[in-house]
Length: 143
Image (cartoon, rainbow, N blue to C red; front, top):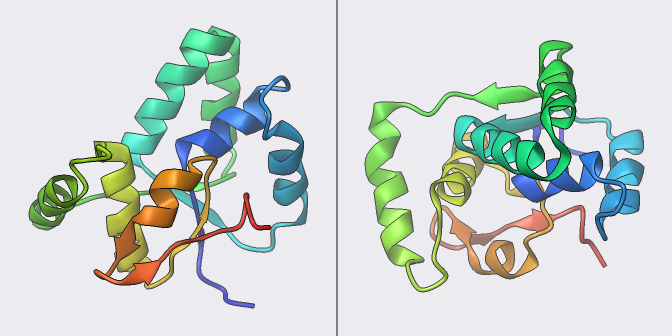
């Protein structure tokens, strides 16, 4: 087993927080057996808070932020040097389209050298490639 951090996308966080989400049970199961640190990005953190506030209210959003404060996951800082890569990815996958949060996760995978991810977004993360050709391995939706 690799010791690289495991990338967490918005859908994973939302599924974890929402008991009525179709992926909730699986998200809880995966979280319970993780032996790797979770990592996400600022765009995903922002997107997750927006969705949690809209769907679950302030308390749901606050629980998510509190889990971060307790050290439940890390947040990767993007830097200005990665802006060109983010832009090129968004242009490459414009037909999907790719948003900033997803582009930031591709850049994170390239930074980590590992494309293991927890996401409910099967279509996009089966399409995206990090380092131009490496596929993501979605451990949340693993068959």
